[in-house]
Image (cartoon, rainbow, N blue to C red):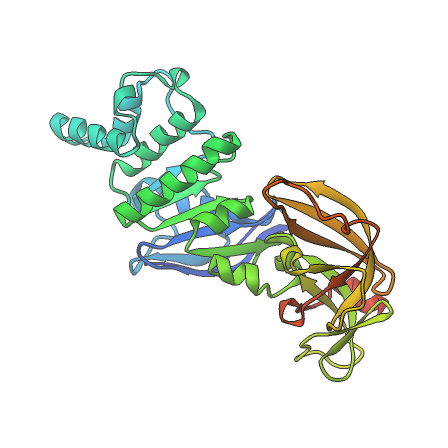
Length: 358
């Protein structure tokens, strides 16, 4: 439905977007995820028609809309700051984009949209009389009222507290599915992107670093940036050896290393929830090393245990699930054994600085 072809943009001499290629299917929810300054908001502004690209084009349902003004595109936009008119009631804000239609049609559509976002009883209230979550629901209803061809969401939940954000995530996703409208959401919050999107587009330094389903980005990162940004991951500096073996510090790990030459520097990634801790007793397991518990951090449903392995010469974070009594086992202090299961290890290309050091 939407195709972005080689979009580039720079401000003064600073490139912001570097040849973005992206396609969005009808009814798909796509999240543009990345740190501040990666170009995701600039890309959304270009899609809105607020900014113009220096290169490339945007095709929507076969039409080249690259130079179309924002009003002609017919897209709905929800901003971080709500952008409601303070002197208009909730109903009047929703009706704002429906000018030109018959009064009865506008009234019916406003009532329909307010009911859809669960705020029919607040129709005559002004924005200042509504909570942040209610204001964002009104902004969403206003964006959807004209039946837009595409919904664009610019950090729509970042100004809200944690509990309201969680509630609205689910509501926005349900509305998008119910209406069958394609949506593109900009966010720097990985949990938000992973929980809401059909496809996550991870951006870094003006380029698309990786895209795929939330499960793919989490389980199969293609670079050290993707591994470090999406979820928590231990990244162990390593050197490829013969066979499926890598050297980490003074230790050796069984790890699939296809694509890496012997002697090549790489990183071995492993998620904290995949690392296994054992009591410091003789055990016949692969990829098992002695380690010391350095600190523990209580995080509600689990404890983050940080250990240091003298053999591997690095720290490793481990997620330890808590029992119903929220107690750690007595042996989980001092010296332990840390197991890095081979199936959970992700070999990744090392950054240039690590390659030079090797």
